Image (cartoon, rainbow, N blue to C red):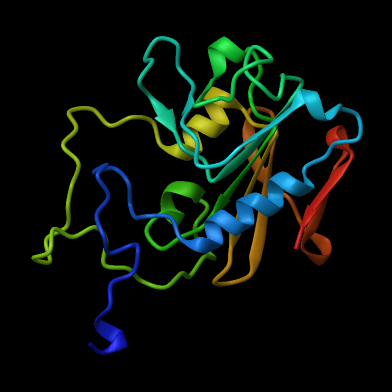
Length: 203
């Protein structure tokens, strides 16, 4: 079979009709690296939690609504839920603390969702989308669409730092919450210092 005809993970439908594609190895390795390096000096290891591809529930009035960030980190919460259990999800109204920093790793088909209206400069490879094997795109059946990811991060959860990275363009973009809205930061040498965490984020 010619290589050109082989599907990628973005062509293969998931059991979740809302999932744009299956995870690739890059997402796994990059998330592991972020978790290993996230060690704020002003917090003990027992008060730091990072999650990878984990359901993040954000609305106590609509308890099924969630987003699934590629990676996020929380400070000031026990590493283990109730100091005894591994988390299976992160429920903000039970934890009482929202994540401080979140990183999305851009993929074909997800960059618009990850960047909201700030998608002008990203040029990722095209993808065919989830198909049913006959070339038809699978569309989720929803009566009412949930808020978009950008709106949830900015308006509901209000993460102080939101970063996106494209391995296709090797570009890191970082947005900081100011006055209730994300503003993109200028990144000299593709890195930013996060003073509240005494940590830098960069390439």
